[in-house]
Length: 543
Image 1 (tube, rainbow, N blue to C red):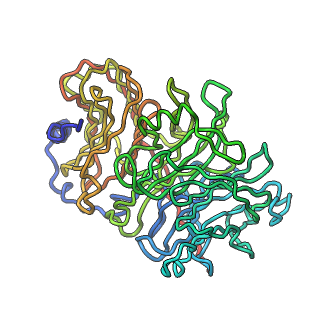
Image 2: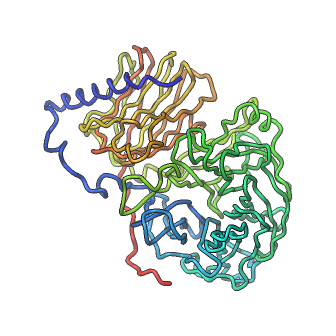
Image 3: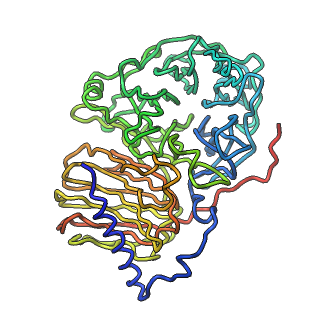
């Protein structure tokens, strides 16, 4: 059931009026007319963005010597997709990033599509030493000229190596390391070391399935098996796969997770990332029986139900005490990524998330949690003790905290069969709505009145909807706001929704309104965040 938009727009306008009156004055016309620059309005405070031009998929991510390395699909000469390079950025806290010179340039084999990177500690490749292990990047070469000829052999897999911890690269002289077997979409290699079998495993997107390869030296690869036919969503091309083990919470059981991005085919249109749970014996991935049964009944196994989390993969050489994985995604959607109203730069990455695995009565489900130590970046706190919602409440009055850089944790008790809507609003009349319909057990985000939306018919024509997997009378919601994005974690990350938006002015007020009068109990903690800005190194890129 769709949420009642007329109601939400009415209460959104009401909140703007209330918040203005709470300051003892009407809206300031001069402030409403202020024209902010693109940098002031839209560049995030703590999500990674390139200094300029186009970015999409995260690539080659690894963790070494307390530094996170992020590479990414990058077109340095335009703000729309074009000949792909690997850009490069690093961080020590996953919030403040330093952008470095371009890591990988196109070559005679083609442009540089997505891939991964691993630390070759045992120097299995022979491209470094035990004292100075090489970092090996594995990526897809895309031969545009060959593609134009109409054949299917224009994507091959190649490697490059770094002997200075990932800051400069040499390409392997005998590339490609895997030739194309005749598959048009043959790309995005994700590699890991399988300790129990002392070999490297590659997961590769191949049309609408994944293929698995093995190697002992990262240079010679043998085909193992494939997976995908008859499972999951096949409305688009499969991309950016990732295979890794996770320990099931509360047990010693290990299951294997296979991520597969797909475009189109997402639960709310366009790009999204689905997942499968099963077992991997070093040769073949076998889907779990319980998981398969629920998948066939209702495919609701998505990393994120929002429109803007795509192509996410995990960091190599990173592990928590729980043996969890760390995921980072591209915060956009191919339906409109080239049209969003930024021009100096295009696209951001999501916040990184820790992935954990829970066993339910009927299957398994991934759980996403924010990985950042927010205490390091919180500068102001608002605490709202338990109270009844009644007709609705103003959580943040106008400009009480900076909602362009904020995090909130909200608890609702005694849920009733009504819709609970968080309303972000500003003096320009923009509003972003998100929340929960308890009667339908459905979460939602509505950005149809969030500011600039006309650049694409696909951006806001429908609300984004997501199911709730439990029928509880309590709800915990955590969300992070960063100028032009909201990342919402419902039920401790059991359901996640990520979406971008482009308000004409920063949001100033946050309210919570039930569709009817409610005795639901509300409490909240809100934090204003003050991370540093992204740093762009003043180093000239070299060919």
